Image 1 (cartoon, rainbow, N blue to C red):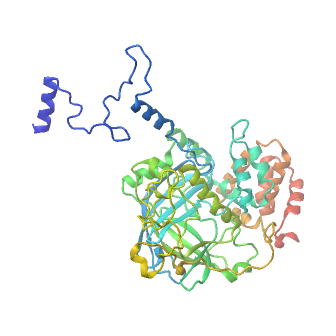
Image 2: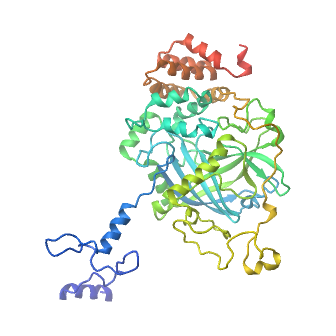
Image 3: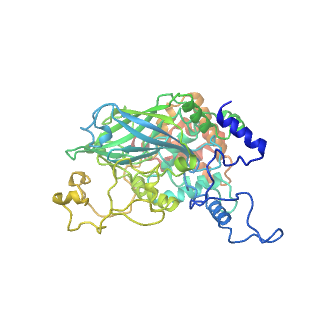
Length: 528
């Protein structure tokens, strides 16, 4: 018998307390040791609990504050650590350092999520899947925030709160209601492209490993010559893509409420590390106006087969590690498209422009103004800033009298003093502007064509499931004018699509055709 086991046996025999023999002493959050963690301090055997029991008060106060505000969108999520490896030197495209040489490795944290449903919802529900990646580059963090589906419902950020309100539960009944959802969507014909994706089986990925990801928005690549090209990012699953039918999803949900998290964690545990290739779909600025749709419209997709689009495989991401603590990493992970590095900039996409503010602002609300110093969000490169104070500030401030810039100590001769100044090499790119300020819709709406192309690209089985799923929601709507409008959008996209949906919803086809003719914005179909 070894000495530790012998000593432990002796303590039992002689009645000695073995509680603290091999364990650490429990402390309060102040570091003070705890004498009793089982019983509150009371005023005698039958008296009340005393407020002076500081350990009790500390525990209850901490418990009361254990939950932070739930994300308004993307509340239900799971994440993993990994690495991104560049396929080559892409400095002709961008000065972003993570793409500067072949095999360069950048740590990442990736969070997958559902968009609309609450934190406690099943992972089998029909919903876009968030696909957000935080790159810890040597130039600071870059957040590539996207979804599994390539497009979105709306094209302007001013409609984002309304859209989310319609998709969220009814404020009176607290139940999600198709009557509210499609009442809003019927006023936005551009949404039919997203609905065509979402109501297909792509709306319920089989798991997180077997789905693609999309940046959705167009961004800008800027190289060292300050040459600008526009780019959309796409993650291609190396495991292939697999989706679920409603029946399959129901069967899985009955067995495992968190099947997608289980699948991801098990794959990593077995060292079956999932990976995705990052593809850049690149377009020259002068080619933006050569399309009959607006390439900066997030309701439109770019294809590698599209004219003027150059597709480049940029690298591969592999997820290799499950977080040690779910809350500290997955729940506190904060993503925003405003988090970017030199060489990557936002485009003029109207929805993206609003998200640049909204996403960072919601993280400051949820986690406090110092959220970027939490371990999961903190850059691995050196942080030099005069930002200070605020709730939960843990950053060691510059040990100097100077907390402003410019100051008398800036400049190369004084850098040894630890002063900080800007580097003009990292100025934003420039864009020529003309015209007047306005509040008008984009000119090239082309709301329906890509939805029709998406429908035509589906297999017959996928088309059948799309019609069944779409009709399932539309048949719950009491106002049949809303149904007519949504079916007309499908008909404007593709006649077979609209005809089959009209039949499945028992909607008068002649009425549908009249509405479709009025809303049709495709020059190729207007004259038909």
